Image (cartoon, rainbow, N blue to C red; front, side):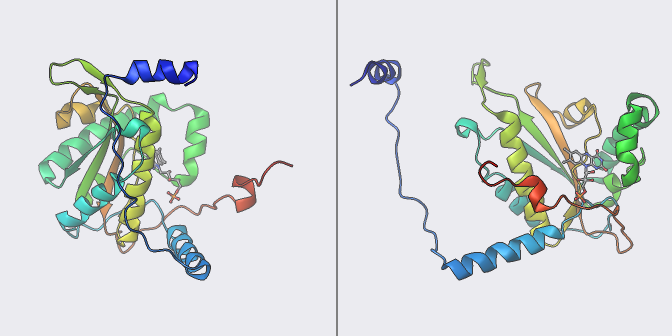
Length: 238
Ligand SMILES: Cc1cc2nc3c(=O)[nH]c(=O)nc-3n(C[C@H](O)[C@H](O)[C@H](O)COP(=O)(O)O)c2cc1C
């Protein structure tokens, strides 16, 4: 044993031994199948757009459960799983949240946003009016658990919370798009009102407010272009 091994063994001697299980069963695809699946997923995701105008048509609760369950398969720092989702379909609550969001957004567009920020947002055509918050059948609020709470109230550290929660958000958005529904990662900042209205603990911070539903039949989206692959991908170094 090296010095390092000895030290590590001494510092972890009081902990239960790690337990391992076989990797969950997975189908081994042929190279051709892999390529076909990869191309199909890319083609599908290339059609994803953030939607800001929703139909009021109902979406079954089970679909929201499945999207959250999918999001919660995300990897996380030290497996702390620091994501918490609140799903809301109660119209009175959605109205209350919309009113609070619009108050913050109005301040943002009138006072808080720098000229540079307004210029960046201008192509999106957004303003402080957030009809999606009451039209969409569901609002899903994603909270980051900044630290956990032990039964006696002491804090339990979480690791790489922002990174972990962002990965979960990506999976949630993918799951929603995959079921043929739409969402929008909305950040009516500052988002403290979400914790207050939804009664979440001080150890949680709202990260995204996501309406979920069918796009309105007349929904339009800003004319945006995504960066070409060569701008976002480098092979080795040159
Ligand atoms: C972290 C984050 C915050 C965002 N906040 C808002 C927001 O507050 N309001 C809004 O209308 N869109 C918001 N968006 C959506 C972006 O404007 C949108 O993703 C971007 O314009 C690209 O469009 P696409 O999602 O249709 O590809 C946000 C997106 C992300 C990832």
